[in-house]
Amino acid sequence: MPTGKPAGVRCAQLTSDNACAIFGRPERPEVCVRLRPNPTMCGNSRGHALGYLADLEQLTRAAKECIDDFRSW
Ligand code: SF4
View 1: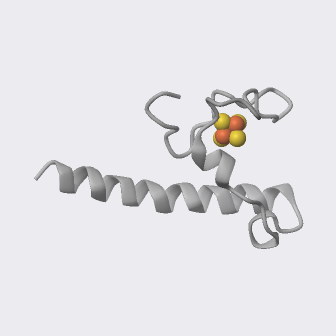
View 2: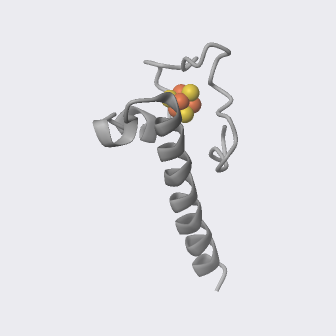
């Protein structure tokens, strides 16, 4: 996704069995390479992990909108 993955949109690299199609390849985004799972993020269920990721997406979406606003001044 050359301009980044919008919040709430399934990654284009995610396969039908929820694996990363570009895992281990140089074109994999740096944020994906650096992200380290931890108990707080993963919790005890897929639902918890998806909720945590949705929260992160919303938080970073807000930050990106602030940066875009700042750049347009
Ligand atoms: S690791 Fe990154 S590139 Fe791969 S499927 Fe997940 S979000 Fe997409």
